[in-house]
Length: 386
Image (cartoon, one colour):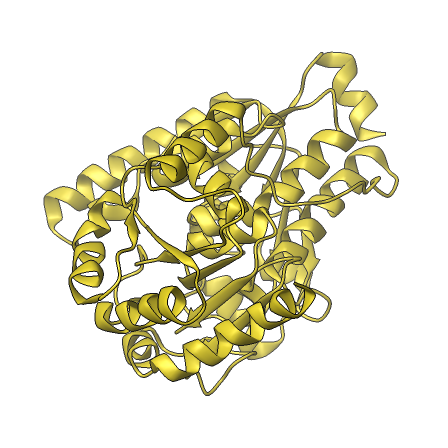
């Protein structure tokens, strides 16, 4: 087996998981990372990640080390920043080459990921080709889609390519397929799959913070809470705060739920606008909770209302029902293994990604009545059970 050959020369060989996506996709990667560690316990599991996902990956007990990738904000197409970007990129390539990895996984099938994978000089470099990535994909992916090139000619920078075009309908399935191929190549046998779930570690102190928050706002243990995530990192992926305000008042006046507003510190202006337009009083928490504390809060909720953002996957990880206001993506990026419903104006749903210029329009066109219907659809079984 490859594993035995490598471990004879190295007590703890390294495997690198390249993750050049955001926090939501990072949470969806956790079942794959857990699978890798459980099947390759002697291997060090490294993750190359963007700045916004570093803390999350560091919190996972099965990740040994996180290598930071400076976010692409410096790519503003000005000559001096492009030179800085090139310098940082070359420095990163030298860094990951020095890691002496024996296996690399890059699941997106994009050129920048493939170059980083190749730069490691690892004998095993596993990638994928799929229909799940957005239209902004690498030259390799565009070529294979247009001319149906054989997989072995698709990407010369990768040693093993997993064809996920037909069997992977969800991003979690795609990442698992690539991870399983890696394990199979190393151990020469199918991996053992035990209880694959999305992970967000919640500690006692996280629950204590949430308990104090609820007590300070006079929320009793039996009272039901609905969290509204007020925004998204993605430009244009937003809903009118006045609409959120109408939904919040409906929840508190008609359904007797307590409403908590959640979001980043940078989204506090949205939170303030929602509060200003509500006749009832919600609980503001934007910028006050860590990722793990937010997961603990969502775990206490009976429903989370959110745009298609990381909040959706945080709620899914703790198995809380979700109403998603969808402007982009489809079933491939849906909440995994939890109860949810979409409200969408995307004419291509559930298969395709609309053009990025259409995202703001698609979200803004969602009306409050549609969201209220979706809320009742999710909460109705709970009310009947009572």
